[in-house]
Amino acid sequence: VKIWLIDHNFVMWHRAVFQMDDPETKAACAGIAWHPYEGHAEQISYFRKKHPTCENHWTEGDMIPSQFGLGLAGGGMHMKLRACDLAKGFISALNNGVQSITMWNLALDEAGYPNIGPFGCRGVVEITRDGKHISYSNDYRALVHFSKYIQRGAKRLVVDTSSVPQNFSVA
Image (tube, rainbow, N blue to C red; front, side, top):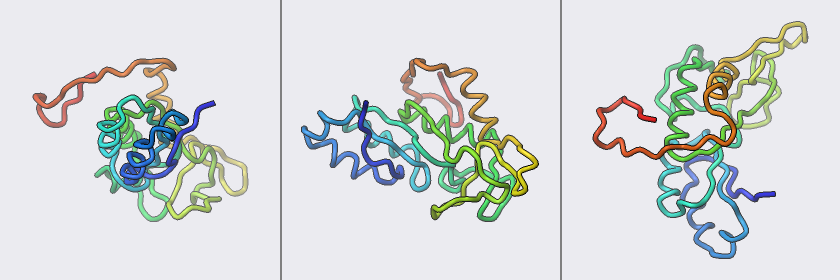
């Protein structure tokens, strides 16, 4: 069993640093659980500079497109991101030290319900309210693509990209 602190948004990185600065807390906890609803994945790197040995996990949530500067394929409270836009968010999180990604919610209806939170959500699968049709969301497609190439136990290579032209990724 591992304990992960915060279980909240990227923007809470200051709180994560404060909590892990306490030696007793750091000894009892493996790392931080992050959500992408507010802030930017780069904020995980701010935390990692202070606590490089701590684990970092994306434990909940769809991405809020505006937080990542991504385009929408739909609109309103129930936003649909293209799978490639979700991939950009995943890559940003992985490049900033996230070790795992868990999406929330598993199954919702076509309008994003039931959802008790303040943010719009999509299910990895969508089930029509009448229960007659199930479809895979772009969240599902992005996860399938990443899990095909990133297997359990994979190692992340840390690469200095400061001399690489903007918009290029290196692995």
